[in-house]
Image (cartoon, rainbow, N blue to C red):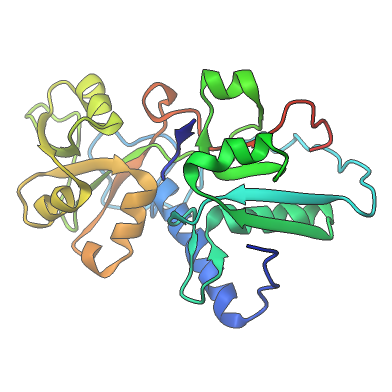
Length: 273
């Protein structure tokens, strides 16, 4: 079971503060996936001085629409997630489970008009065993499909893709295909480092042990750009520590390096689910 980015029935969230939190969370994810004024296709040449309109990538066929199945009145869905993988799923300051996966699960229940939905937080390593033992119905926790997972369970289409993105200092220009080598900071032994080595062999790679050191090097001007997880960089750029910098270019979504995306998982034979 591969991780993507990394108890009880929850109460209704009608308070204004929760609504604002949801909007900010969705905004942060969209910024991480798409950036400000970025198109779906990565920018590979010098960036334009004129800021284009915001374009949000659409990985779904807009004409594809599955009809809502007839469900019995007592139908329920028990979602399984984990509690410590922000911004996808985590415990908020109010002590309640929240995050993108949690909000998506609630939205699915509302769309399907399912009256009884529960979202349970479990330890990451116990998610699949809990599903197999019929103590939950759907895992929604940032799983990426592996051959082993597909052999044992049924998986959904991807509902979220992150990939990699470049970040640079504000006011600087950056072209990863420029004739002169550019200093690009990556986290050592990561998929993002492997992608840069393959896609941009002329780049001068600077490897760091973790994201904190990588981002500090960009802020200090020790590298021309950094390349990393789109969601993580999006959250950093929208925090106090990331005010120095901005995204450059669009998202790189090569599945060979960054996976097929996050999927939901159900037991084999659960046709209705």
